[in-house]
Image (cartoon, rainbow, N blue to C red; front, top):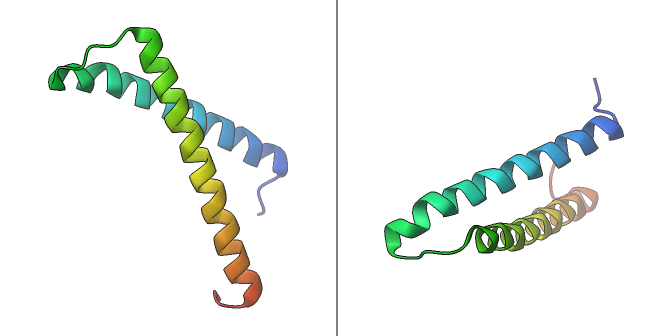
Length: 75
């Protein structure tokens, strides 16, 4: 069965939100191991920047593979 647009949107939002929380939590735990001590607010901003970059990367790859599919390169 095909996924509805609403279900796809909910999945994407949830996936992004969970990824953001995991990234920020990881930064808060791991950065001090390397002597980097940042305020919590900075960790949230850094996480947001990486999330935006990740979304852009994912979008670009999806469009690239869709173009390949349309051209018949991918079966």
